[in-house]
Length: 368
Image 1 (cartoon, one colour):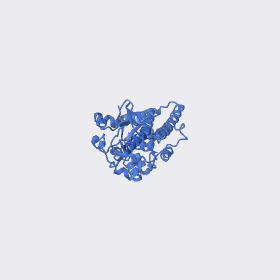
Image 2 (image 1 turned 180 degrees about the horizontal axis):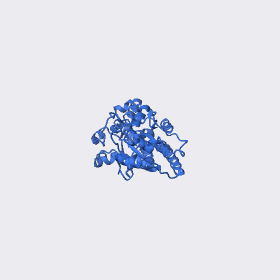
Image 3 (image 1 turned 60 degrees about the vertical axis):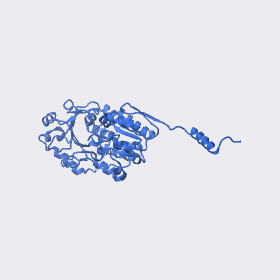
Image 4 (image 1 turned 90 degrees about the horizontal axis):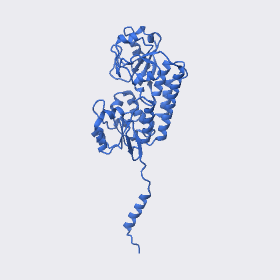
């Protein structure tokens, strides 16, 4: 006589089957704030705070479908033409919930929790800004992982890429990207070291306000960090702590050999140098030339020698920033980088890793 009823036998068989199934493979990472975070499987429903292009590059095909919500402002407002390019290719991006922006103090943790993400990806500066509010994600059982390409170090770039690959289940792709980035930066460093020390002085300005008002420059970090790593001498070093305007008199007295104007996709800025996605080369050149009408600028060595350049402000602090490093490196060490075409390298990067192609103007030299 069979002592098991049909229901008992079914329950036993089901239990045995479940016991035979492998346990979900946990993924544990140490993020860019030194926090150990564990998730049970690659994330499929992500709240994406920043590093939008890096997320797409590392995650690969189907990346957009794995975004549950965005902190939209830093993308749509800071880089509107880039946002337009991606939403044209992926209209669903524009329909995603927007949880607000930490920079504008509109970020809502409650709205973020409401979309029930299985992972929150934040930039270091977003995580720092949210402070104790992060505990609300912990209480809701939603893991938070911090990335930090803003640190502008090789180590942080590589670590951010590998962490992102791990949590998205794309470790091989992330490793390829990390290896590629490391190789490009190593080549840049080797060329700079082989070229030897230089005494080239550089003035960089955020060309948002036009020539009638002095824009911010950088004492350290951002473009200052790029110039320093490449052996140039930033005239704002020791004069500006992080960012802010230099006095016109100081700039004239410093007699910079190179002027670097950082442009972007700003709207409602009638005199700004517009660079980046959708930028028109002739308009960019016209706006750059206007800066040389400032009192005394036409006599600066940079103006006299034709060493006035434009660079896309959105190009720093991302996996594609190797191309912008190489653009500045070629300015400072022209012979060592004679065979390097940074614009072509940027295009090749997008063709290999990104779902859209960069249409616009990202690096340029003033044509007079």
